[in-house]
Amino acid sequence: MSRSDSLPVIGSPRAAGSDQLPHVLDHAADLEGFLAAAGQPAWRAGAIRRWLHGRRAGSFAAMTDLPRDLREHLTAAFRIWTTTIAARQQAPDGTEKLLLELADGERIECVLLRDGERRTVCISSQVGCGMGCVFCASGLDGVIRNLSSGEIVEQLLRLAALLPAEERLSHVVVMGMGEPLANLDRLLPALDVARDAEGLGISPRRITISTVGLPPAIDRLAASGAGYNLAVSLHAAADDLRTRLVPVNKTIGLEAVMAAADRYWEASGRRLTFEYVLLGGVNDTRDDAGRLAELLGGRAALLNVIPYNRVAGMPWQEPSRRAVAEFLGVLERAGVNVQVRRRKGAEIDAACGQLRRLAARDHDA
Ligand code: SAH
Image 1 (cartoon, rainbow, N blue to C red):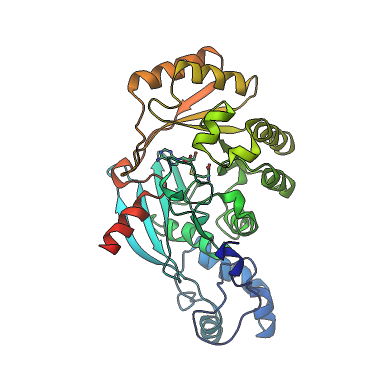
Image 2 (cartoon, rainbow, N blue to C red; image 1 turned 180 degrees about the vertical axis):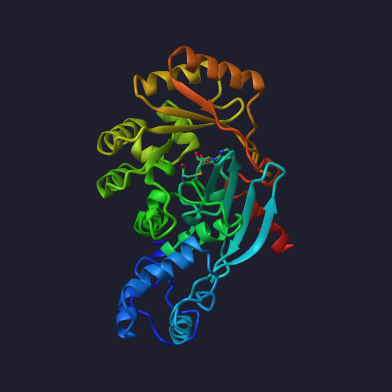
């Protein structure tokens, strides 16, 4: 059993001024109940959330249109921040990456990508990852714990705070550290805040959850009815190779993954995305591309091909330019809607789990 199961359940606020205070960003933090007990009108909950999400207030004291005693009361009852920024890096293309230190000293990464009008954030769902994909830096030490809903929302707010006042976050991708569908119970309330008009007001159509492909959790996500985009990481179109690269495939299998993706598409009406990391000499031949085209069949899906981002100490190579071009050529000729994901922020190791590992190395040294 992972340490995630010992995460405290956040209920009604306690008065003590310690780091045990409930996180005001957590879905379960009972702001309305607190206000009722304090004899305050319920509409103030919306005002407080607008301060937090829209006006990016970093403290209750900054919420200047609230009565002073209420601000003090809130300060004594709730935390706004549980994280600190341990490192911040900016790439020449405008990509910014934050390494956040959590209250228990664990560290996670999140990234802001600037692309034209788009302000996309890439957030983490767990500390580490239990899926064990052999080429990914996040899973090297297994899963350490799930993030709380508040810790997930806090990434959004920390990244939003990097923007000038007139800019807003436009897109969210849950493609940072961790397997989001292994932490769905905490992810969904966090994404409620992201799409809430009183929260960050980001349309669910602009929120994408990337998964290694866990069928029961895909079905639960479909049943939630939230209408997020789903991206399924394939990396191979045959079970033997996929199981080598994505060990959890052993007990799931591609057929079940594709069937769950199809069910998600039927339930949500959202176009599916599939991801395929190209590893030089491993899964990048024309035959691999042919099998992939066959697997995708006539699906109206988008295929994102991602040339591998090298991870120090790992044996995997990026594919050659020629291999990428040939791979794409086969897929295009087969009528697959394919795009190569541009590498943003490569200069700042903005690929999964890399900054955290570098920082951990510096930390340990
Ligand atoms: N657990 C989720 C989210 C992981 S990160 C999932 O598996 O989809 C999002 C994508 O980045 C995944 O497709 C993952 O396989 C890929 N990825 C991980 N490490 C990478 C690397 N070093 N270079 C390129 N892509 C990588």
